[in-house]
Image 1: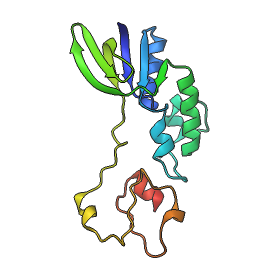
Image 2: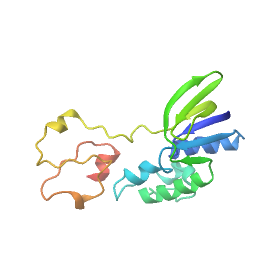
Image 3: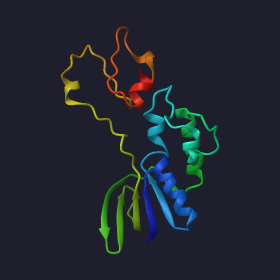
Length: 171
């Protein structure tokens, strides 16, 4: 039994790992793909963080007013992951209470831990409104998870739905 299992090797999971390591806690980070996978596969080409460098100290030294690109974030996540006990390609399929701890079921066998940090992210599964399925096939639709850049769009008018970070940057 290890002290702690962290599920997810994105920024939150790696931050948890760094904090655990700083306190000498025996732990492992389980990642279903590669560290920072959603940053590789679900960001458009011109993506930038919407928080300035001074707010992202976990990502390492950067200019105070810098807004890191997606590829820069991936490089920094890779650097962080190299210093953490990350097991890539290990998908956690179930989490059960087990006596004084927890059992994490994975395709590669069970992991038993006294504590678990779930850091899987809350926005890596596309959510498309039901209305979108009722639009005619001639209306091209892209979720931010699969959008890469304007070159993949057909000629003509574009409507960006959403006004948060993703919608504003893409527009």
